Length: 248
Ligand SMILES: [Zn+2]
Image 1 (cartoon, rainbow, N blue to C red):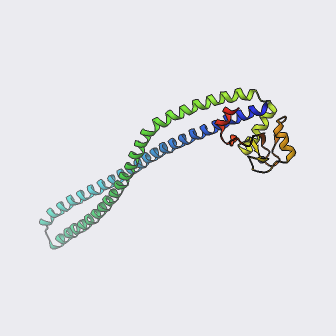
Image 2: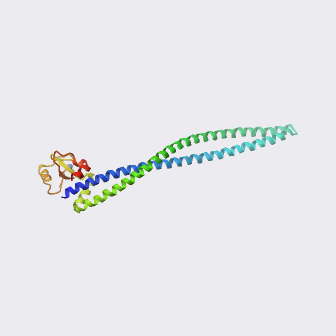
Image 3: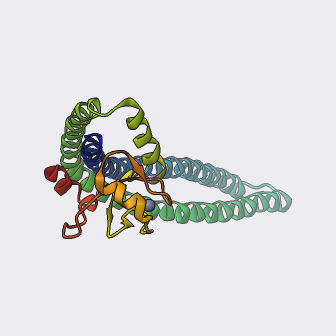
């Protein structure tokens, strides 16, 4: 009977959906961690780049200080040999100007060093994050990948089983099942005490009798799902696909 095959088909489809869901979640977690690791790495590279730029600037400023100091030394020597008060004053002006310049450059160097320190702290934090993600990735990824490939094999098995069951269902009914499944996710449900277990609405008595007779495919007039009769003392078969599979 088609309805029994449909029930089996739905059981396998539910299994496939569940396994796919688990696989997808594992893959997403893995990808999130890998992306996180990559972006932490990129961020560290950015820090290094900024730090390197500041360091270059700092070295240039330090070289400037050195050059200016040498200039001061030269002026200082000429100052001692000054031939007039005017000449002496001129060298003094140069020397004082240069000393002022050095003060300003030293301030710039200090600011650069402060910035470098900030970058260094940020980099340190990022590095810690990177190490944490790295550790987690190492522990998880092997385990996750193993589980993912196990689940993929499981899905293959279910798909093969599904194919075998689907062969026993007429093409028209299979199409109908797929269509309802797309809209309602569960396509075939039990009727218990005249109540559709898909939408929990009452089925008219005449239709209920027909479902009990199980002689043709009956749709719930409210949710359009395909109905099958279930004795009242049974558990909610359609909610437990594994049990359902064994029952049929
Ligand atoms: Zn219904």
